[in-house]
Length: 372
Image 1 (cartoon, one colour):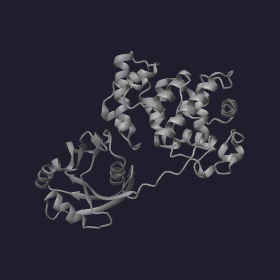
Image 2: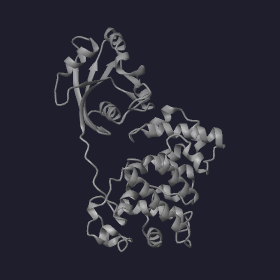
Image 3: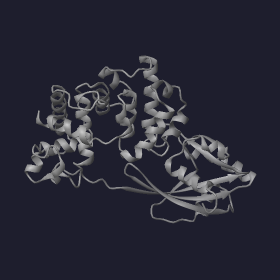
Image 4: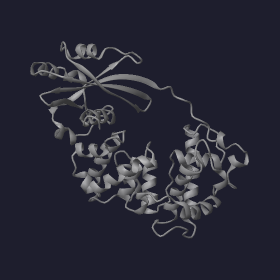
């Protein structure tokens, strides 16, 4: 197949030196693929390197406490990914002797692994002719084949998976055209398509003159690169405003761990109250109504913006110092916060606990030396 013949030597010559490309360990490839879901490469690299240093094998990960795992993931977002990594590592250790399974069905049975991730592990780690289909791959295929349908439709997905299978199967039939550190043509081909989508065949400014597939690309021939794939429908953002309170008493700060099942499950956080978007109610009044503590001195700290899927959060943070009597009243309010448990903590105790990214930034701001 012409596409495979063009991509394999191109990738050999231009592939970026990324840490997960220096190994064929399926565990390491799995970790990188999970981290790269909805996250940019430059963000993932330091997380991946810290993770592999702390949890170099499935067995070491399986033996870790969930708090330690979430702390290592802290700031990367979509924390269910980390919990699934832990659960899958425990299953690999219990059912497969700590060795990542090679059988495709067994890979798919692991928590948090779908068709794309299983295909990436199987093809990259084991050089199996398994297709992959992420956003970058789908965009390349849609342009080369001029697929104008909604790529999320069942029909388009089926077509894209078939084409992806044709490409990797064609690569498997060719003589090796890759560098020694890659396991084979299937590994190189799938990484090449992802590389092309991530570098030259981007959504807004495709670099067609440098593309190894330019003479094969139907969208290029039609001079309609930006019309493929069809732009997805824009989903309106949901704006939310919250107040977070660093509640201090006797040099200790009150924090709680979120219950399982929702966003940020298992993470620690400061007490938080949601207010109407765009409103600027008095922090003193918000704190009083929530805590039932009168005349507390509330001092502004900082403001943090972050996103979770469609939700755009603006978190205004405040510091409150309480007397021992008021401390007991605060403790009685924890059931309404969705917390599994709550603690009064010093700095050392907080340092080892995983916080949501926004609250980690607030605590770091509050703990920083004056003028830092």
